[in-house]
Image (cartoon, rainbow over the protein chains, first blue to last red):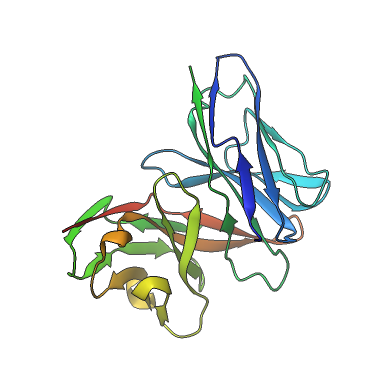
Length: 115
Length: 118
């Protein structure tokens, strides 16, 4: 089945450690996104990528980094510079371009807890 | 800049009764509007979308929403709630950004948690 796979589902990190969250899609979508979700705040955009080897900062990119070496993959690294990394992270994709209707396809999320 | 406000953070209904989740938006032009649903510890799923066609939009699972430009509202309704409707619902507005080759940015509301009681 086509979809988006995020791993790990749960992750615990000690302060000062970098962690990488995986996001893989087999929908053949051009665009991929990372969102952060905190209780009562909706979703906030961290980074997005419209094409391989290109990505743009979203609203809260500080303390995060991404890469887009393959169309299918868009990993997110939460660095030690991120002040409050405990959150639920969601990866999404869309078929970018003029035909896009605005629908995003989401993975099931990764919950990161900093101890 | 566009924005979206969900007027209730929590809504509680009894099974079989109507559901109303309220959303107001701010936009300088005709927006595209969406409702997404999220079940606990899951990703979001599109319920329905408005993209300047019919103002009454029907979605999945019996939900519908009406775009009212004069009231800048896009409220979500369902005639009869089911236990499986218990989830968090997000109202979303799309903003077109002209830089970087053009990009449709989605702006999410803070969410409304719907509880359904037997």
